[in-house]
Amino acid sequence: MKNESFYVTTPIYYVNDKPHIGHAYTTMLADMLARSHRLLGHDTWFLTGTDEHGQKVQEAAEKRGVPPQEHVDTMVKRFEELWERLEITHDDFIRTTQPRHTKIVQEILQDLYHRGEIYQAEYDGLYDVRSETFVTEKDLPDGSSIDNLPEHVKKIKETNYFFKMSKYQDWLIKYIEDNPEFIQPDFRRNETLGFLRKELSDLCISRPKARLAWGIELPFDAEYVTYVWFDALVNYISAVGYRRDDEMFARRWPSQVQLIGKDILTTHTVYWPTMLKAMGVEMPKTIFAHGWWLSGRDKMSKSTGNAVNPLEYADRFGVDALRYFLMSEMSLGQDASFTEEAFVKRYNSDLANDLGNLTSRVLKMVHTHCDSKVPVACEIKEGSPEADLWKHVQTAVTEMSTQIENMRPDLGLAAVMAAVREANKYIGIRAPWKQAKEEDKQPLFETLYVSLEALRVCSALLYPVMPAKMMGLRTQIGAGEAEPAVEDVKVFGKLVAGTVLEEGEGLFPRHQKPKAPQQPKKNKKAENVVTVEEIAIDDFFKAQLKTAKVLEAVAVEGADKLLKLQLDVGGEQRQIIAGIAKHYTPEQVIGKMIIVVCNLKPAVIRGVESRGMLLAASKGKKLTLVTVDAEDFPSGAKVG
Ligand code: MSP
Image 1: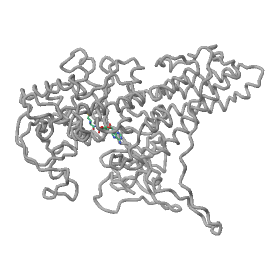
Image 2: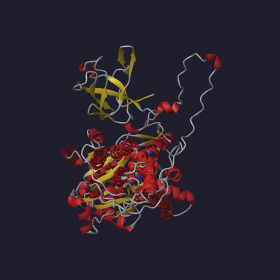
Image 3: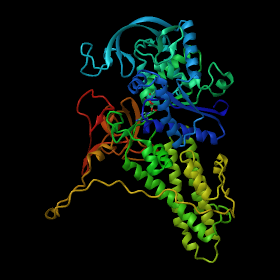
Image 4: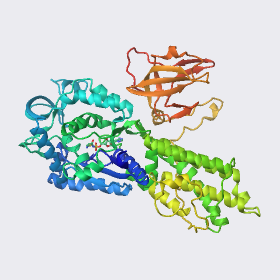
């Protein structure tokens, strides 16, 4: 890492949109990373902001009968207020209508025009008003054609300005191949490389003012404004001093990680790097595309009105619980499903039960039996239950930092929760309620001190995800009110004996499970009939089933029932472990198109990671794989 500097960005959000859980997610993820790096003492910078130009903003302002600037000044508040409510600690918030940004965009345009990187030409083709992009016939939705265009696609003929993107195609392919960390996860890199197999065209970067006036004027032709993406992408460098403050720019750029959703992969991994190359600016180290939050199984969208409002959950369960759910439920890169049921389930099991119970039972005993003070410190004896617990706590410490580095916070959090459960088990073994009855109170004090220490370390590890709650917990256990110091998580015995503990509130009160739909009443006469519990269609759709092609298969060493399969799921490579070795040889399964459950929690089986489960039918000793009938059917197709 350059001078231990960490610069993280989110996409800048369309100011017109009502912020929903997707926007909140990327921003919380960036926040968690920024907080973690700040704790590590890295020179951290976290940028977010809003994208404020373009057709839709112009139209919305017209509809409201206000000038576009007034419109965006009103709309931006929703994002600013949401970030404050969600405890987001961005260092800067850029708006593309700010002069510090528009001026730099114009300077870049002027420079590229001057150097012949931008030229004028006539465009005669199709224009998609909805996405504000030029499209070709092959981009049209099924059922439409050049003679039967959908309403949002128009034929246009106009003079425009083009950026010579095509000349960087070969360079970009090589750059992506030589720098595997540039586009992450790997399957997204392959997606971009796939896109680059087709010939890249030049990028139209202007819009005539007659059609769209709300944009940044081209410095070399006042009849035009620049295309929103050519404006928006520049925010990542205009905000950190490009062409304005060399010292700041050298300190922040290249950024460490640019977080995006998978929907804006091409703009970030094709347009953006070629723009930077033409400007002579270094590439960001990593562009990381995460998956989508689905509403149950469906895409969230304004039109269906199924987008989850983060404020609703923050109000009902608390901001920290929302942050925890989002960070622990999504395996970065994959899509994840947001449902109230899943939320309540995770909240109750991880936060209310495991962590909440541990905290309240330990603190209750400390207040009752230790005069509300941290009991005397002890040493950990080798081979003792204390040593065992501490080992688990230290595994969580290592896992958390490794998984943050690997961009798998869900796995890091799972390791911390595993340590919390170990602490609960430890209390079960030592039974402090029995120890309290003994005359010698030393064993009781030891149990409570060790438990408090486990809580101290776990709360520090969870702090970047649940800052307010963990600070509350740390105050209650006497760990002080300062942010947790990273070095302290590896050391036993940091809590000072005799520290007086204030009684605090319960951290995570249990929530009622959302009411399950009523089961039909049992018919008395049919008492002897074996009934299968019925599930709602939504329950079925929670399983994300997809077609997958088996690329490789090998036996798992030391396990006669297991095969390790490498699958292609619509361009994404996945490894799963399947218990089919008694029925299939590796050669028999290679090339088959099977069905896998893609959103199953990853598991480690015999030391090997398995990300999903295949479908097979079995009866008695017979087993057969569920495969796809049609030949040449694509992998990655939805099943259901
Ligand atoms: N303004 C452009 C980005 C320009 S960046 C130079 C834009 N804005 S947006 O408002 O549509 O936000 C897109 C981003 O919001 C996604 O890339 C993703 O980070 C986040 N999400 C929006 N919906 C989402 C989900 N349903 N799930 C997860 N995140 C998604 O595109």
